[in-house]
Length: 95
Image 1 (cartoon, rainbow, N blue to C red):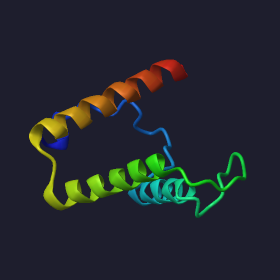
Image 2: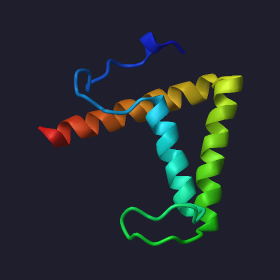
Image 3: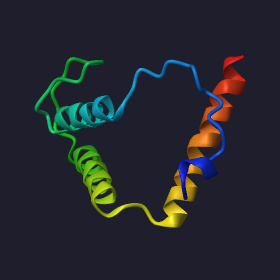
């Protein structure tokens, strides 16, 4: 599925402040907090949370695999639809 097949971005022009690099660093930071390697910014506590750490690391691994191998057509459609619907919901609630 090409980008042209996705619906138009209703949030075009709205500064998002995120790109792939900041997204990966955000997930990495979350994993470090869950591993107890960094303090939780909201509580200041350092705590090992194995399930959350594994989940976050698995998400990063899945992203790596998908970038290496590519998305299936049904995965592309799902992602396109989910992002579009969430953006529409955000725009509607932000009015």
